[in-house]
Image (tube, rainbow, N blue to C red; front, side):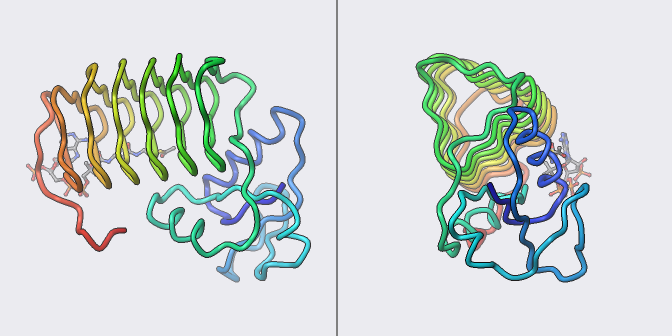
Length: 203
Ligand SMILES: CC(=O)SCCNC(=O)CCNC(=O)[C@H](O)C(C)(C)COP(=O)(O)OP(=O)(O)OC[C@H]1O[C@@H](n2cnc3c(N)ncnc32)[C@H](O)[C@@H]1OP(=O)(O)O
């Protein structure tokens, strides 16, 4: 499989692919200054062979992942799951999403496409996670939580049961979210408070 984007996130993807015995074929990035990721060479144009193999986006930024997913002509991988992740048999995982080491996705949760469920994060039962979300390391989403498209949950944040978080929201590292959060809000602290809004053009 291929990786589109040669960031730090791509390094983690390479090792996830290795963890389940998969192989990395091509890594692409349009920045000519990036020559290698781990031991892999980086290509700076999309070769015809690349289009033939499933690709995962190696970029941590949610907006950029969305842009790449809209312009890339090839197919995306099924969800990539680190060998140490625990995934319920009744969970649903979208194309191009990634479940990192020691993450948990519990019963009947839905993770849509191109999401990052980062190391050690917990997605409890009946969550709905829309496209392009990033749940950072160690964050905990309790039961029946909803996250809108493009939302970023910071490291170690905790979201209480039934809370609905809007689209393109940023939840700060370590926040405790007790109640619903509107689209584009930036929320920090315990209890979580809105400090500003992401710009609408972020999409
Ligand atoms: C493998 C990986 O690396 S995965 C990536 C994981 N990344 C993260 O978890 C990062 C999460 N990001 C954060 O927590 C950031 O601090 C953000 C997005 C909430 C805010 O960042 P910025 O927009 O740059 O805001 P800025 O740093 O100017 O802070 C604004 C105010 O909020 C406060 N603040 C910022 N972050 C937090 C936080 N996590 N908790 C509490 N207060 C915070 C600041 O102290 C500041 O307060 P002040 O105005 O009283 O001085």
